[in-house]
Each structure stands twice: as structure tokens, then as C-alpha cells.
Image (tube, rainbow, N blue to C red; front, side, top):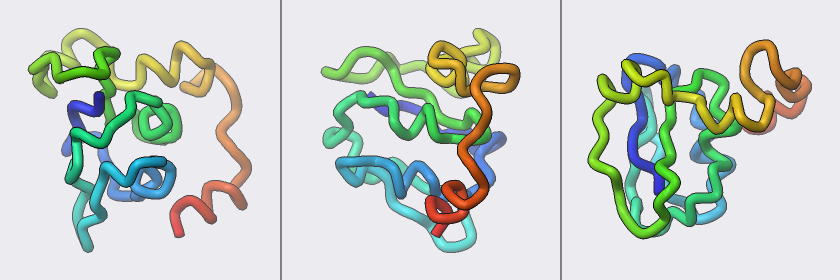
Length: 106
């Protein structure tokens, strides 16, 4: 279940808002998105894997949150852990083409 959006990492690109199949996030004009409907999260990791800034953390438990904080995630190096595991992080798979990223950003 989506658990944390890092205010320090997020650049407000809203890709997570665009890729979420269950509309969990709400865009905030001039700010970073918020987790608006957490209970609708299906733990699909689409937001985490598409986030170019590794600003999201999706806990593997689909039935509830872990209660983990942003500083704990930073200390444990868990931001972007799913991206790394599928090879989309730096040094891994190349990011999608600029045209695709542009469409996702709206």
C-alpha cells in the first residue's frame, strides 16, 4: 500500500497521479501530490516504478500500512527500492523516451 511521498525528493511532476490505475493521488497545483485515497491502493507499484525521483514508497503489505516514516526510509535506503529491483533506477534500465515522459507529465 502506498505509504509515503517524500517532500524532500518529489519535484511535483505528477507522474504518479497519471499512472495510478485506482486514482489514489490528487495533484496539488504548485505543490506535490497527496495520497488522497490510500485505501484504494492495490499495491501495484506503478507509482513507485515510474517516479523519476524515487520519492515514493509502497509497502509490500496490501492490507495496511507499516507506519514507517520518511527519515526511516531514507536511513534504510528504501526509496526507489522497487525501481531498483526491476532495473529502472540509475545504472539500470534506461528511462522511457522523452516523448513518453512528456505525455505522462501532461
